Structure formats: C-alpha cells, structure tokens
Image 1 (cartoon, helix red, strand yellow):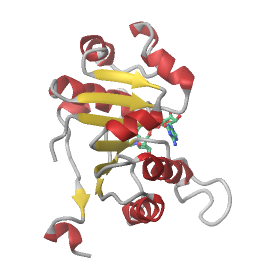
Image 2: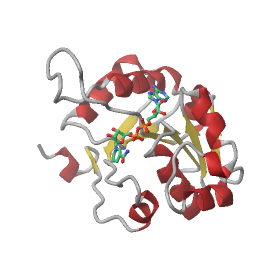
Image 3: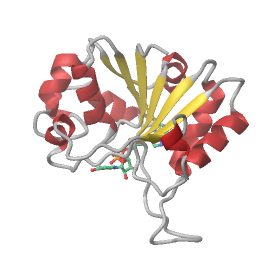
Image 4: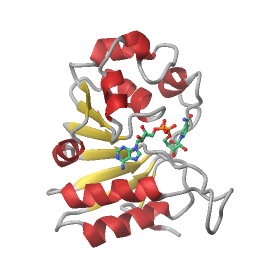
Length: 191
Ligand SMILES: NC(=O)c1ccc[n+]([C@@H]2O[C@H](COP(=O)([O-])OP(=O)(O)OC[C@H]3O[C@@H](n4cnc5c(N)ncnc54)[C@H](O)[C@@H]3O)[C@@H](O)[C@H]2O)c1
C-alpha cells in the first residue's frame, strides 16, 4: 500500500504537533488533522500566535506546511475515507466512575473514534493508535472495526506517544524512544 494521505483524528496536544512534524518531514504526503471541536479546527486555521497548542518551534512549522500538505478540517468522514493511514490521537482521561475509577483509562473517545472509522471506511486502512493505553486496547479497537466495518481490512499498530508538553517539537525531532507494535509480523503475533 502506498501512503499518500494520512488522517489524524484529534487535533490536540499530540495530534497537532505530531502531524506538523510528519508533514514537514514528508512533503509528498497529504496530512489532514480532524477534530469534533469545530473551535479547535478554527484556531488551528487561524493566526499563528493563537494556535490551540503552544510549543516552542510549532508555529514556525505550521507556517511552513499549513495549506501545502498539512490541513486542519472539520470533515471527519471525508478525511477518514480518503486516508490510507489513520492516526488516533484522541483524549483518554482517567475514569471518574464505575470499575477502575481513579485509575483506569476511559476509552469512550477511542471507541467512538473506532466506530467512526468502521462506519466510513470503504477500503483497507492502517490504524495507528497514538494514545498511551492499557495492553490489549488494540485488540478492542480491532474488534470494533471488524464488527462494525464493511468488507475491508484494518491493520492496527500501537505507537504510543511519549512527547512531553513544553518540549514536544524537540521530542518529535529526536525521540528518546519509539515503540511500534502490531500483529501482522511474527514478532507482533507473539503473546
Ligand atoms: N499531552 C501529552 O503530553 C501527551 C503525551 C503523550 C501521550 N499523550 C496521550 O495522547 C492522547 C491524546 O492526548 P492529547 O493531550 O493530544 O489530548 P487533547 O485533549 O489535547 O486532544 C484530544 C482531541 O481529540 C478530540 N476528540 C476526542 N474524541 C474525538 C472523536 N471521536 N472524533 C474527533 N475528535 C475527537 C478532542 O476534541 C480533542 O481536541 C491521550 O491518550 C494522551 O494520554 C498525551
């Protein structure tokens, strides 16, 4: 599969800077960042001094690539449908009630995101999970995609983000660790 279009769901602290750096480093790939918050997308498309995330070096990158190969859009379905690779960078707050309250991650946004991808996708896609989540979350995402999706193949990769707020761009340019896991290789299939 040749990657020409990437979509990132979630234009927050991880989605914005990470996609900015990918767009800068991969000028031949069109990167579209979407969010259910229309105000956030407006801010990403607005003046460089009022972007929704402040990180040293970020506005310079956005200035270079926005409108060239980096786009911020409210049309989530269209961006999903057109992408060969979809990053999930939605929030995963700690649960405040029910089993695991105060400790476990609330996966409702991840699940909603997976349902959107399943509903909209008309062709095979690689799904990259950027959130730092409990082991086996990728399997849960795969179940949702396979149960609700059309006759398409989804490959799920776990690629948790370790950037720190305040040094996000520095961390993205020179990461001290990169973790990628999936189940389509022999090593990825090992339990
Ligand atoms: N902020 C950090 O420093 C940091 C570092 C490493 C990892 N992470 C992890 O990365 C993930 C994302 O964190 P963040 O800080 O970017 O969150 P964030 O709250 O800044 O942004 C998440 C965005 O996702 C959007 N969203 C939620 N559900 C959606 C949906 N179904 N469709 C479209 N948009 C949706 C929200 O509107 C929000 O703008 C979390 O799992 C977090 O734990 C964060």
